[in-house]
Length: 178
Image (cartoon, rainbow, N blue to C red; front, side, top):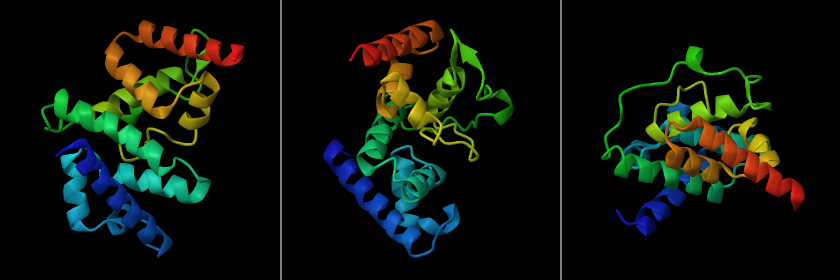
């Protein structure tokens, strides 16, 4: 499926999900129709992930469709290129998730976000967790980064946490200077 085709279909699915949410279908089980679920599987997006994005959009006004599309674009590329379009069959454990106050080089939230980004890339996000949640978005804004950019960074850096931390510090320093 070409980039334009998947993006068009994702936009349509997102639009239907927003309409369903507005019509009172506000659960993962009721938000999407079966054909939409099949499409999401092909692009590496779970129903829970789309629900979380739509629910936050409706409640908080973000993330907007363009942000969601960008994040899912990175996930889709990772899913197809690194995973061969096959799910890992694993789910991250909430017990393994660093706390919100866990810090690296004095940056609280970053250890947690690194783990969440890795799980998002691999499609292993537990249902109770959201990449791009109401904690991630303001954190990344403060650091001068975007959800998409951070996800790409984690993909590029692999398991090299020090490189991720250095890139976040650099982005935050640029933001302060600007």
